[in-house]
Length: 384
Image (cartoon, rainbow, N blue to C red; front, top):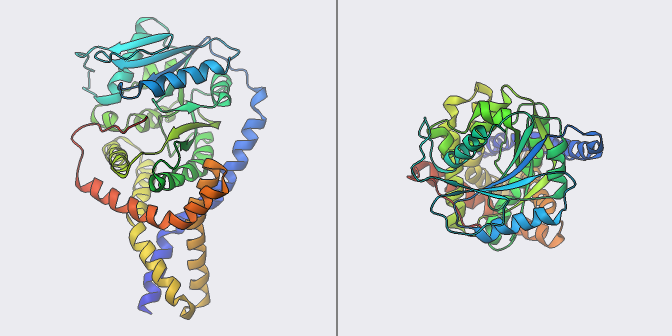
């Protein structure tokens, strides 16, 4: 009886995956429908800025993004900006390089990437182009948007939107971190299309966020400590409370962390960014973030109980066996589907099925260790 209660608790922890599998199927259908309707969109801005923000550590990647954008030969006017710190001596092939003065301080003393984004916003205000006739597509220094992503962002009748990610650039450089990030891909497609089109996004990532100038002007990037750690979460969430949010049915291609150490740095920044943002979010937004963190922390005991359940489950009542099997399939399927959506290669799916337990067991201690060791600075990971 005691063992049945333990495994029933494990099944309860995995309940969100049942719901997410349904959301994933819905998200794939919704994405295909939005793509089919793309030709009907003609809500074009007068000015379209593709902006890459970088700390100067990945100049090759930034210039490769710029070259990729040029290779699309887009049929509408656009300009590329690169936002860098004043000390960055790298050369960028953008239409404009905006250098953030070392002495620049925001009113709320926001730091890190949000500070640079705020400076670029103020540049647009000074030039009187920060209004609804301007759209800005925000990219990180490893964000490679598909041509369809840029075109949809240009034409879509929304005030702020984002698409979905694929962590397929350099896939397999570190196999465990690549497999761990397969989960991100599945999670994004399961969550982003539905909630973003409803105007209440739950997962917001800075890669590929697009916003009209009037949205950026009103919301700003200057929200103090919370914005310093999770600028995309704060900006997108606050904008969604007032402006029309949407979803872009195309992907941004990014890289997984190249090492377990980088995975730890990345996850720790996300964790503390989420925690610092909680007090500024609504109750439902806080609940969603806390529920996700809870599921992440429970990965290790859930996997341990599942292994135990696989060994002795034949003696359980049939309803518990069915629930346990469904939870296991949903959990495994989440990683495997992410591998397929990420790479479309059977070999990568097979690797994921063989090693996803190791990837899952790696992530939970990373989260716990991250919680116990608050970062002192805004940590960035290698992009090239």
